[in-house]
Amino acid sequence: MLIVEDDKAVAIVTRGFVERHGAFAVVGEAGTGRDALEAIEAVRPDLVLLDVHLPDASGIEVLRVARARGFAGEVVAVTAARDLETVRAARTFGVRHYLVKPFGLEAMRERLEAIRAELAQVEHLATQPLDQRAVDAMLQPSERQKPGSAGSQLTLDRVASLLAAVDETVSAAEVGERLGMSRVSARRYLDRLVVEGRAAVAPRYGGTGRPELRYSAR
Image (tube, rainbow, N blue to C red; front, side, top):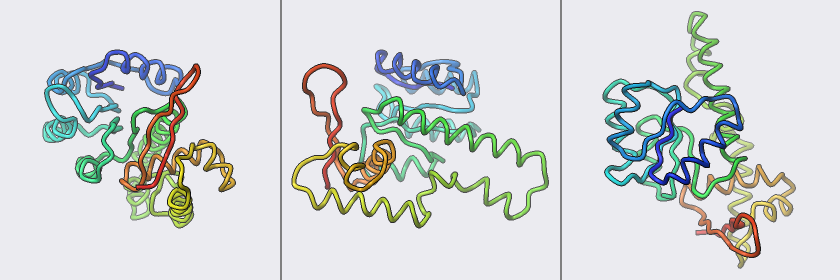
């Protein structure tokens, strides 16, 4: 895995997240678009954690150039950008996974687990003739992450409706309690609403420890 992040402190924390997960090894770090392209060319990583905002270039532009040069690895867009245009541009160049800053260990773990499962599936399918079912399996995200599944969309709409109905901001734990789901699941749907531009998120500081993320409808 290659970590592309201009904030050194964030890069160190991200490396720690990845190393604790254990399924991927960090093969390099880059803090600029230029360094990222050189690193991708040199090590050809299976996975890139790509910050969208870099000091010398957009991460989307870095990805466009990398794809043009033949890079076919997986990419997780790590971004504070929540506008639809950025998400659409990333999808154009094959991004299927996002981490919205600030993110926690659980969000990182979920993305890495999904990608590990997808890579294992591709490796398995490579050993057998490809029929229509096999091709569909390769092109579609795992069922847990699949945005078009009926259950997933229904739950997403329930979370969006709850945000629209409350006057105050809410945490993932509060959403989970009200809708009868785990905090982790609620956080995943809330982050998806943020990426789609249907919700806003902001940290709330108080006392010691990590700030609490609070969500509201947009």
